[in-house]
Length: 286
Image (tube, rainbow, N blue to C red; front, side, top):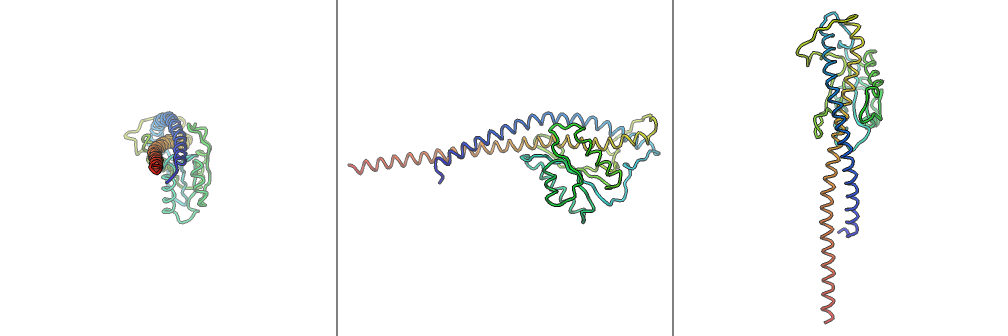
């Protein structure tokens, strides 16, 4: 049985750990509020730009663009959004496990796919397994701006345009609530499902032409899809970390209660033993 000193040391250590996890929970809660607002605000923009792109692309039979057309798939690109830090529950492991299993099921050779990674956790995961990472970005802020990821987003879109890969899938955690995040797989390129969520198309007048507008608008739209997923992922990350730290704090409370009970029992046993020895010694002197 542990000594009173050992139990007291564990209680003190657990209380300090609880203070840390409680502070991290509060920090994540504060970050979550802003990240959630950013994601919801950007959704309004994405709905409108999707409606405009769909109207331009589908409203005219003469308008064509390579990003709208499927082609034989020789190589697949995977864009994976993870975090730079851990302590976020299953936030990273769910995405990475799903991507890893998907790649192993779909491809027999490393020449058939390439990976673009957001976050240190994902980068280390793929590098450790010797998987081909063509580009990565780390150190993205908790409240990212589009300028922070414009270069890598434009590069991903450009790699599709120049034929480096023939389709691009994106994996991230979609934010549902502070306690629920849904693993999401989205096909970014080619843009073959523009009409999926459009009940009706608006009519626009184009200047100079549909092709010229699509040449500028489609890359921007694809880059916006990536940025929107990052905002969604950041909200999910803060929610997952807040939930994980809350669970850790609750577990610390339970452990402190258990250790305090053990400490009191051990102290009571020690006192009882001392009283017994005193009574026994007094009886021996009579």
